[in-house]
Amino acid sequence: MLVIFTNKSGGTVDMFEKPALELIKLMGRREAVPSAISAEDLPEALETLQNALIEVSQAEKEAEEAAEQEDNDDDDDSPQPIGMSARAFPLVELMKQTIKDGSFLMWDYQ
Image (cartoon, rainbow, N blue to C red):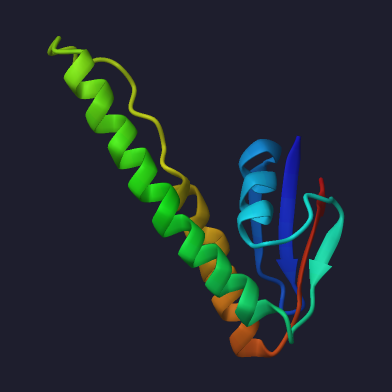
């Protein structure tokens, strides 16, 4: 299932449900769909998300290094997981634009 993040000026970000809910949680919000963040609360939610993403990125890097130490095979064919920071990038950009517009951020299922 897809979660669509939108703002008043027409910007949208489509995301699969699981990472979307994780990002909503990292914003310090309740994992509820549909929901929204007011213009007044959005800067704090963005800062909370960015700080949480730093921590998540460090944990992902440590886990990747540990996995590399365990698996000494040179198997370059295995797919690399997409980090949460990469998944969050479009949403972070949408949040920045929404703050600039003085709008609110909404999300709902498609």
